[in-house]
Amino acid sequence: MNMRIVSGLLGYLTLFTGAAMVPPLILAAVAQEVDGVAAFLLSIFLCVAVTFELERFGGLQGKDNVGVRDGIAITGLGWLMVSILGTVPYLAGGYLNLVDSLVESFAGFSGTGATVFADVEILPRSILLWRSLSNWVGGLGIVVIFMAILSQLGRGAMFILRAETTGPTKDRQMPRIRDNAKALFRIYVGLTAICAASYFACGLDIFTAVNHAMTTIATGGYGVYNSTVGEYGSAALEYCMAFFMIVSSGSFAMYAVAVRQGVGVIFRNAEFKIYLWIVAVTSAIIAADLFLEMNFSAEESIRGAVFHVASLSSTTGFVAYDFDTYPPLSKACLMLTMFLGGCAGSTAGGLKVARIILLFKFVSSIVKQKLHPQLINPVQLNGKTIDDEIVYGAAKFFFVIVVMDILFAFVMMFDGIGFVNSVSVSVSTMASVGPGFGIQGATSTYALLPTLSKLFACVFMFLSRLEVFTVLVLFTPTFWRSTNGW
Image (tube, rainbow, N blue to C red; front, side, top):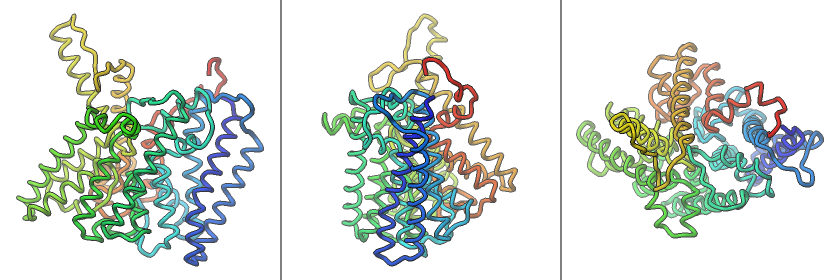
């Protein structure tokens, strides 16, 4: 691993983080938020200082080529460093203590959307904007946005792109890595702008529309009101939000191809079609359950079901009604969609629908081979044969996620939290959802968690955003040793 290159690129990332703090600084100055101006000035100064120190130690030169190990280090350490720097505005402004600042920042950049603020409505607008920006920057991926701006980085750049995009398959739609990153970034910005305009048309003011648009497309779920979407009581807004949350659950690479080849690409994508079926069937079950068990009207049942299935399956976590009061069947369905998540290559968290498809087809293939030992029955997706390595990778990831869920639940039970609450918080955190059932509830916060559980929540949000293996490899001794070919 070339520490000079890694340090240089990490320096650029810290400078990029400081640049992301400029809009909240400007807003704080315009709104005459003295504490906010001081907090963001200090935060930007710290980012510049860290950049200066990293650039003194390293930097890119001439024909430097980023290796695979360099890519792993840049992705993992970059996410960790940016998330830590993101705590400074909360801490310097006196809004949160150190542990809570870490939780808020990690939850923001990871797209989990969990919060430790008991009352977000008393926060200055600059802090609300920073929370939404952290969601938005982390949604597509800090390094992907960074790569869209930076020049070609070599073969290691492909690993960086793969580490940032989620799912078992990472389709490369263009020959150059930077072109891929730029295409994803353009789609991301375009959808955010359309979403903000739609929310404005639904009656939100410009500030609220932009904030919610950023956290919708990023599937982060940070809002500007304690009751999030329930504050507005608007059916049109809820249906509009549900639409954009479902859109954000689709692969952004798929949308980039659709721009060039037509919308037919979207409707031919097997994973996205199955995701839509999951949303439709689950919404129908929940709507019927609400209508029969809670005496909701037909329209209220359908709206509540569609909105919350879209919210939790996309792992956005917006809340229009306290779904923790729903009947057991409805809560079980919502928990399932939360665990499954959206599509590979989307901003959604969770296991990913593509992995579920591959695992089901893998099991089916094994059963058929038991009956017909000579049968060759490869796993296929979207008409393409999937390599065994990718299929086995999906199985390994499923195993690791289940183990991580159990481990985090045990940590919280050790910390004094009950079994049901521990499982709920664990699944919600690992799926990058935020809201859940029990102690953190639909509209409650992570402020109720003990300190140890909060610290472990940061670790598991970090692991889940980078899909575990990119982070775990940093803890292997051989990673830091010099090896030929790396």
